[in-house]
Image 1 (cartoon, rainbow, N blue to C red):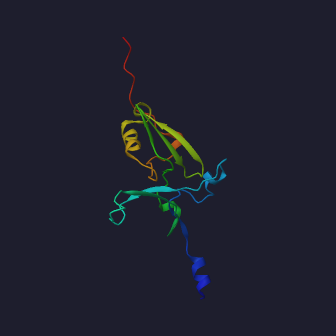
Image 2 (image 1 turned 120 degrees about the vertical axis):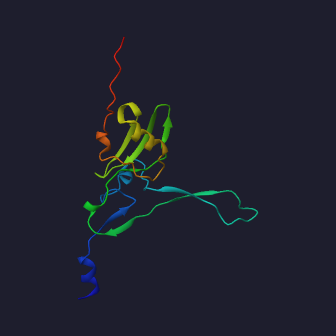
Image 3 (image 1 turned 90 degrees about the vertical axis):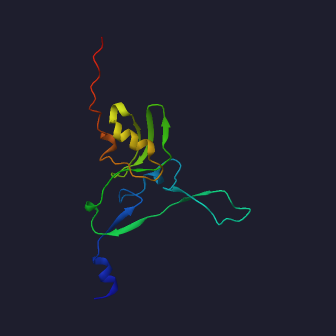
Amino acid sequence: MTYGSFVSLRVFYVCLQCPHELPCPQLTASEPLACSFSQAYHPIPFSWNKQPKEEKFSMVILARGSPEEANRWPRITQPVLQRPRHVHCHLCCPDGHMQHAVITARRHGRDLYRCARVSSWGDLLPVTTPSELPPAAAIDPPES
């Protein structure tokens, strides 16, 4: 068995950063920009270099196995905008599309709202389908 035939028998899938194995939806936009994520770090402490720095990076990690075994949650592709009583998230979904989600505690539940508020750029948002975010189970109080 040759090396080439051995490699072709293995099954790989995209593990990180994309939640899908389709072409990047950001590259098809009017202003193409590949997915990137921000990471803060502390540089070597010289007298002229004491402030924390922040760099953008882009990467793809492949894993062995089948993609059905992996969680397929959408990834946050831009900084989360926190507003009073709602949060704006730009998501790259497992179906290969970008989606802008406005998450509120009343409509989507307190747990998802709090999770979205503390999430940051590059995190996975634990929902199955952002277009069908679950409505809150809260019932409106009767008007008197």
